[in-house]
Length: 165
Image (cartoon, rainbow, N blue to C red; front, side, top):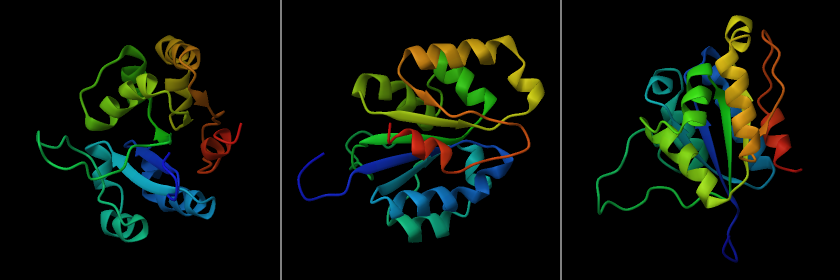
């Protein structure tokens, strides 16, 4: 982080039903002095209020790759929160699949060495799948901080709290 600027937090939003509430996380992060940039999966774009997010953060929402030579619309992150993190995105990320900008950023985050915290959002049936448990174990070995998740309840700030540790 350079002198004189706020630390930058990327909020990666996946397409879970609660995604429309991401403003709560953005507000909490800004109250903790983060400059927030939002990266959404293409399917999450239909679930969020893009205009409200842009107005709140002052940054465009990223959901697609930029063309070579185009300026970077967000500063480099000092940390990343993935919320809500879906079954699909968690499993793809753990496997190194980078088929969306959001997953590409998450796959690169390991090499950047920035702290990453995750708040899963999935069904109990998905959470019982062996691939999910294996993916969480792999992400933890990579240093990813994963918040506990109880189906039927969701906390927007739990993953943000993990960045304090």
